Image 1 (tube, rainbow, N blue to C red):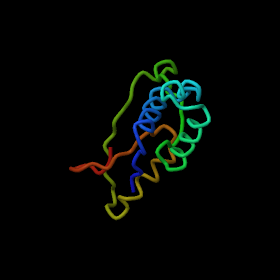
Image 2: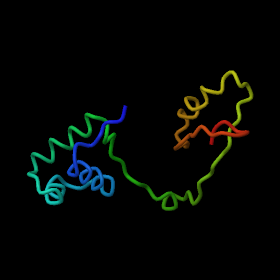
Image 3: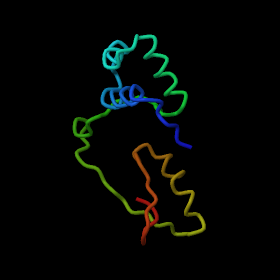
Image 4: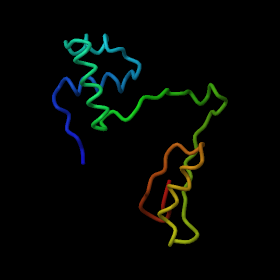
Length: 108
Protein backbone atom coordinates (compact mmCIF):
# COMPACT_ATOMS: atom_id res chain seq x y z
CA UNK A 1 0.00 0.00 0.00
CA UNK A 2 1.36 3.42 -0.95
CA UNK A 3 2.31 5.78 1.84
CA UNK A 4 1.11 9.30 1.05
CA UNK A 5 3.57 12.11 1.62
CA UNK A 6 2.47 14.19 4.57
CA UNK A 7 2.87 17.61 2.97
CA UNK A 8 4.81 19.85 0.61
CA UNK A 9 7.84 19.66 2.90
CA UNK A 10 8.02 15.88 2.48
CA UNK A 11 7.72 16.33 -1.28
CA UNK A 12 10.54 18.89 -1.21
CA UNK A 13 12.77 16.53 0.78
CA UNK A 14 12.06 13.58 -1.51
CA UNK A 15 12.70 15.67 -4.63
CA UNK A 16 15.93 17.13 -3.22
CA UNK A 17 17.27 13.73 -2.16
CA UNK A 18 16.20 12.23 -5.48
CA UNK A 19 18.29 14.87 -7.26
CA UNK A 20 21.23 14.64 -4.83
CA UNK A 21 21.28 11.71 -2.44
CA UNK A 22 24.31 13.26 -0.74
CA UNK A 23 22.55 16.50 0.18
CA UNK A 24 23.38 17.41 3.76
CA UNK A 25 20.76 17.84 6.43
CA UNK A 26 21.84 21.50 6.61
CA UNK A 27 21.16 21.93 2.89
CA UNK A 28 17.78 20.23 3.23
CA UNK A 29 16.98 22.43 6.22
CA UNK A 30 17.73 25.49 4.10
CA UNK A 31 15.40 24.27 1.36
CA UNK A 32 12.53 23.57 3.73
CA UNK A 33 12.93 26.23 6.39
CA UNK A 34 13.05 23.55 9.10
CA UNK A 35 15.75 22.92 11.67
CA UNK A 36 18.37 20.29 10.97
CA UNK A 37 16.91 18.02 13.67
CA UNK A 38 13.39 18.36 12.22
CA UNK A 39 14.70 17.49 8.75
CA UNK A 40 16.56 14.49 10.16
CA UNK A 41 13.38 13.25 11.85
CA UNK A 42 11.40 13.62 8.63
CA UNK A 43 14.03 11.86 6.52
CA UNK A 44 14.16 8.99 9.04
CA UNK A 45 10.34 8.73 8.92
CA UNK A 46 10.38 8.70 5.11
CA UNK A 47 12.98 5.91 5.26
CA UNK A 48 10.99 3.95 7.87
CA UNK A 49 7.80 4.32 5.81
CA UNK A 50 9.57 2.95 2.74
CA UNK A 51 9.28 6.17 0.75
CA UNK A 52 13.07 6.49 0.65
CA UNK A 53 14.42 3.00 0.08
CA UNK A 54 18.13 3.71 -0.13
CA UNK A 55 20.91 5.85 -1.53
CA UNK A 56 23.24 4.90 -4.34
CA UNK A 57 25.95 6.18 -6.61
CA UNK A 58 25.12 6.72 -10.27
CA UNK A 59 28.01 5.24 -12.19
CA UNK A 60 28.91 6.20 -15.75
CA UNK A 61 29.17 2.85 -17.58
CA UNK A 62 31.38 4.36 -20.29
CA UNK A 63 33.93 5.38 -17.65
CA UNK A 64 34.17 1.68 -16.77
CA UNK A 65 34.61 0.64 -20.39
CA UNK A 66 30.98 -0.46 -20.77
CA UNK A 67 29.71 1.83 -23.55
CA UNK A 68 26.35 0.16 -24.17
CA UNK A 69 23.26 -1.29 -22.58
CA UNK A 70 21.33 -4.25 -23.92
CA UNK A 71 17.66 -5.13 -23.70
CA UNK A 72 17.09 -8.86 -24.00
CA UNK A 73 13.70 -10.49 -24.52
CA UNK A 74 13.22 -13.65 -22.47
CA UNK A 75 10.72 -16.41 -23.18
CA UNK A 76 10.84 -19.45 -20.89
CA UNK A 77 11.38 -22.86 -22.46
CA UNK A 78 8.98 -24.29 -19.89
CA UNK A 79 5.93 -22.03 -19.33
CA UNK A 80 5.34 -23.75 -15.97
CA UNK A 81 8.49 -22.05 -14.65
CA UNK A 82 7.86 -18.61 -16.11
CA UNK A 83 7.48 -16.83 -12.79
CA UNK A 84 10.83 -17.84 -11.33
CA UNK A 85 12.72 -16.08 -14.12
CA UNK A 86 13.09 -12.75 -12.24
CA UNK A 87 14.50 -14.57 -9.20
CA UNK A 88 16.99 -16.45 -11.36
CA UNK A 89 18.06 -13.29 -13.19
CA UNK A 90 18.47 -11.43 -9.88
CA UNK A 91 21.39 -13.76 -9.13
CA UNK A 92 23.33 -12.22 -12.04
CA UNK A 93 25.09 -9.01 -11.00
CA UNK A 94 25.08 -7.78 -14.61
CA UNK A 95 21.26 -7.64 -14.66
CA UNK A 96 20.02 -4.26 -13.45
CA UNK A 97 16.29 -4.60 -14.17
CA UNK A 98 13.76 -7.20 -15.23
CA UNK A 99 10.27 -6.28 -16.45
CA UNK A 100 7.28 -8.46 -17.19
CA UNK A 101 5.89 -7.53 -20.60
CA UNK A 102 2.83 -8.41 -22.64
CA UNK A 103 3.22 -10.09 -25.99
CA UNK A 104 5.25 -12.93 -27.40
CA UNK A 105 8.07 -12.57 -24.87
CA UNK A 106 7.52 -12.79 -21.13
CA UNK A 107 10.26 -10.56 -19.77
CA UNK A 108 12.58 -7.78 -20.91
